[in-house]
Length: 196
Image (cartoon, rainbow, N blue to C red):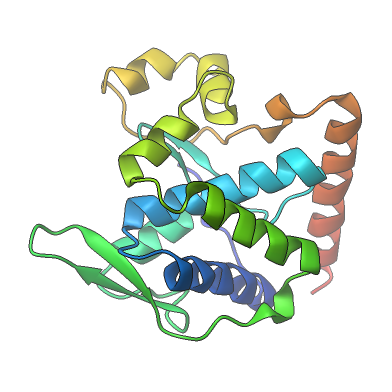
């Protein structure tokens, strides 16, 4: 079993405000759709900038990549980690929807990150949760490539397995130079976090 991530106050603020941004810009934001939007933001940003947006780990699950800590938080009656930012509302069928509890605060974001938040909302925000799952499952996507690498793709698609601890490998979408830059960013983030 993977261990829970320990978040700094800055990380919580950035992730929380990202969730607020999606809740403010996407109507009827379900839990599944939110999880896919967070993932697609990370994938898109890494592909174009060779650095992480939120620096979350995404596990290979049946319905696509999932940031487990966000999943657990939005799956509970009330969020714990992101309680200052969002609230959850189950409908009559038990499907969970997300709403913003705070106003979006851009203090944690660069101009390019704001552009990417907007870009991802424009590109994917009108798709259904099911359509977003199909996007994450496309051939040669990091989710698909990681599932193939660990030989769990068929088990996931045939619903013999629903979750794994395998982390999505974003290097599959980067060339050699981008992989080096991406790795340097990850090392920098880990080093700077250890100093906090």
